[in-house]
Amino acid sequence: MKEGMEQAPADTFIYDVAVIGAGPAGVQAAISAWHQGRRVLVLDAGAVSQRKGRAYWAKSVAIEDAPGLPPLTGPKLRRQLHGLLTSRASGEAAQPRIALVGAYVLQMRREGDVFAVVASLGPLRHGAVESLATFRARRVVIASGFEDGWPEIEVEPGQRMLERHRTAFRYAGNENGWHLCIRCDGHLHRGGHFALLGVGDSIYEASLGAQDFTSRITILTNGRPHGLSDAQLRQAGQRELCIDTRPIARHLGEGTLLQSVVFTDGEELRADGFLVDEGLTPNTQFLAEFKLARNADGLLRTGEDGAALRADGQPEPGLYVAGDLVAGQRKLIAAAMASGQDAGLGASDSLREWQEP
Ligand SMILES: Cc1cc2nc3c(=O)[nH]c(=O)nc-3n(C[C@H](O)[C@H](O)[C@H](O)COP(=O)(O)OP(=O)(O)OC[C@H]3O[C@@H](n4cnc5c(N)ncnc54)[C@H](O)[C@@H]3O)c2cc1C
Picture 1 (spheres, rainbow, N blue to C red):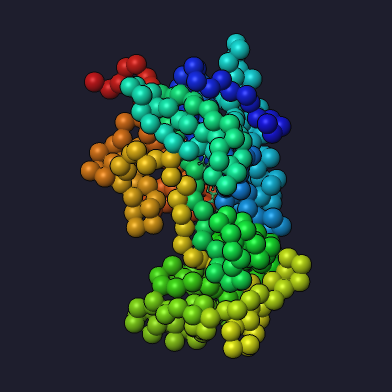
Picture 2 (spheres, rainbow, N blue to C red):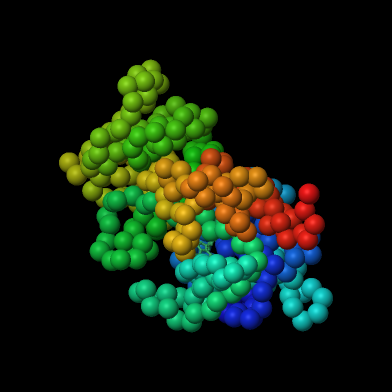
């Protein structure tokens, strides 16, 4: 059990609101529901798995635009936000008002009026569960974010993402390594040469964002067709944007400093900044039982107050969504916290005995 984490009662106690994920969205959802007097449980995979959360990835890059906070690296931001939760942990009576538990949620189901949330309290070792617990709550806020896709360069055999992408991870989250968000890290390479890895609309969108910082931009497709439309290609030509479709063989770097990539023909491409956009995987595997509305990326559609919508467009009773998981929302910390507040208050308000007649 990590410092600051609660040993919350599983199996018997029924919480008012369970929040899955303690990134910025989940933290805000929990605090907003707690502030209305609800008994809140937060289950977070960061302590027991490599699913740390996007907010906590930045190893040496300071996040400069998180609401109300000084510039902070990912691990420091995590300490700050989790500190906010645990400072609200000592409520009246024996039952903590916000319980923060290191737990990887594996499954969720309805049991009458409550949700049963099944989670592993220890690391999953090659799929095997160390210690399983079931928590119950009347409402659930899903704030588990998504995992970014990583570059298919020097991929090592192995099932686990960390093993497969070991080389890319060495450079990820560093000032001179793989970036994942142009709006977040573009300023680090102002006036420099930016190499953007990916294909199609999403990488072109990143190139539009990169123009805020530099006009020296190369799109790398790593051997794939670029997937750009004729209109995008025409504009790319006017912008003198380079598109290089050669397959990439390896990274060239020193320590955690990525300097260049080497193509399979042996030529090297140096750049000041590297960004990858290879798609995403929503952290929603535990929702298999629920038929929720999603966009093309698998992100969840929401209605009023962050209510999760079903595939038929109707709200899924008792279920709320916040943060990066919300379809159409900006993927930034302030937006995650704002939607966390919506979802936390929505969940709390729905527990009132008297509703508008
Ligand atoms: C490298 C990088 C740099 C960034 N820099 C900035 C920046 O400078 N400014 C900015 O505004 N935004 C930045 N962002 C974007 C920002 O981090 C995200 O928009 C924000 O973190 C979204 O918050 P979230 O709470 O929705 O998700 P996350 O931060 O991803 O948190 C999700 C949480 O859910 C937990 N979780 C996942 N699966 C499970 C499960 N099955 N069971 C239990 N818990 C689970 C994870 O452990 C994690 O704690 C950056 C992102 C990256 C990747």
